[in-house]
Length: 88
Image 1 (cartoon, rainbow, N blue to C red):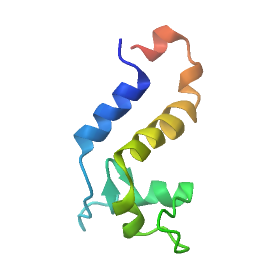
Image 2: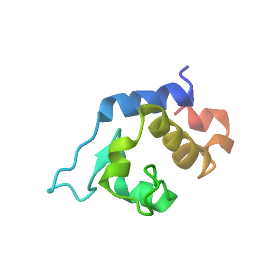
Image 3: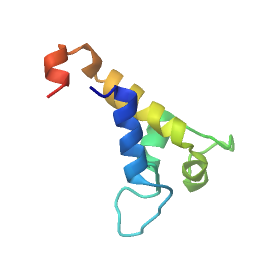
Image 4: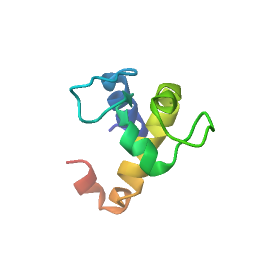
């Protein structure tokens, strides 16, 4: 069975790198992490006082994997569900 980290890595790999499609309501996105998520988390990676597309561009693959694990698996307590439910 795959680990949560392996699954998150596959998601990041599939999502690809930076895009900022004006027709996509998600806005600037890198490795599947949107600018909205980065703003919610306060990820000002260039330390200029705001979270903008430049911060999204700076996001690393490893940071994206960590975001998926921490905020989409551990944060909503999915990690605490019984193992049979997690493996569905």
